[in-house]
Length: 434
Image (cartoon, rainbow, N blue to C red):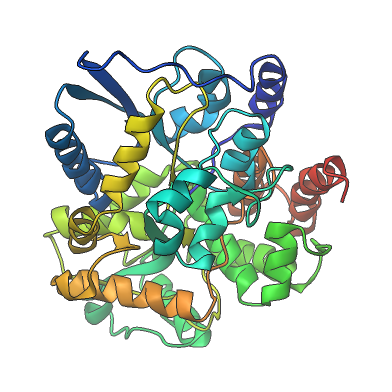
């Protein structure tokens, strides 16, 4: 997910720490017959699809591994992202954890020597056969920490993408139909605004607002531009049509009342709670909310649609399971990953509002889940997943949060914001020797 959280200063400090602590040797397992513990971290909510699936996987793991106990610790997304380098470089590292994919996170840790090379296990256990090439992009990283090639440092076992959630009752009450073009979408936003309703529940203090910004840039983008921006396959002009349109349009949407100015300080959780309370007709965010809405949202009928008019959408494989280099129980960690890739767990994931990568299609019986998975399959079949805007460089998530907040609260003009988000990106490119 969705969703990078790595402050530039912390990333720089982590590099220094890693210089004296990478390359740890695999620690020996306990003697046969001795009790063992698998220390596992993840940050999925208990009510979400992944939380339900991983809970079932833990139970299955313990039932198939007598004498082994799983010590699960729920960690906050921000908590893991901001401290991962330091924790994994200490004796506090878990045996397996969920981590965000991309250059700025998993790529950075792989370059620092903090993650186990899973290439041999991926081939031996068949993980490489279960994942399509596009989904495996986020599993592999080269020596520079750039995704898409090199060694396997993680295993994704679900997909994700950004979509538009909508309140069917508010749409009907205000005479708004589901838009199929961008022009129809902006007309719908305008109709709500003129009725005194702020249409989009937004969160500028975290990732959602920058994903709206990226959606707007993608409306003017090509696959070549995406690969240049995300994979460093070409130069990116931050004052080109893609980002210029995104910055100008987002600022304009605030002026028109499509997005609240005070949303600059709102977090993702509060954004979702407000949408679920029926305060906004629209929420633009990822599939990671889907299972929670299925479970909790009884107040009104809701649906989803892909961002109208776009060929591309933010999305990718889901977060990945990584095995820290200092894990004391790597064999158990590999077994747990295997279980999360099993049909039983994948089918549960799919019927709980998640996007499985290895489920039996016939086993997905929930109608809303089928819609979710069908839209994801549509995107993957068209090579339309565009990753996420904060992936390219360590610390870039916070750069984009600050930049998009400035667009929302009007503290800086769009051109100035584009200058400020260009500089760290280009600095990172120079550090890589590109």
